[in-house]
Length: 226
Image 1 (cartoon, rainbow, N blue to C red):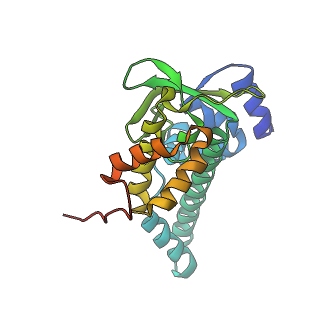
Image 2 (image 1 turned 135 degrees about the vertical axis):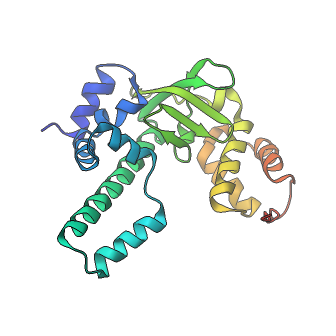
């Protein structure tokens, strides 16, 4: 059976760019095949990658497996679902890490212009990935018909969002706020500095922070629920 690395070379390297929906099967052939077997086919596997089980559902399933008196059939079904969910999360995490580290280069049709452009590596860690639809979304940045390929050795990373670094940082802060809630400006600044590297400047961060939080200094105001 071919190893994952062999499959990656055979797909993304020899064949050039591949569609986002095909990337898991090329890059992680053995694990994706196992996921497809657990989910009844490729379509089910892609759906598992795009829509992992809600945390509360996974929690109750694990509680049932650990403490409930399940029938043999119920236990087998629960174990299969648990294995599939864990495997899907593992595959997505591995894919994100490969793309975010620059080992994979990606491009897509940018929603603002309709033109194909390279996708900055820093987007992948937090973006919403839709393998089946071939889409990637992070805040105001959305790409369709996404393709990936193995990056050449020493290939320079693309600039954040066609040089609009402030907008990229703003999308990062906006997405982080939705996921984590309000954080101290100092902590956000250091997180952005680490994420964007040379593209980070205090002026760009302040502009992005002001756009997201509506203020420049101090602790972000707590969002209130209506």
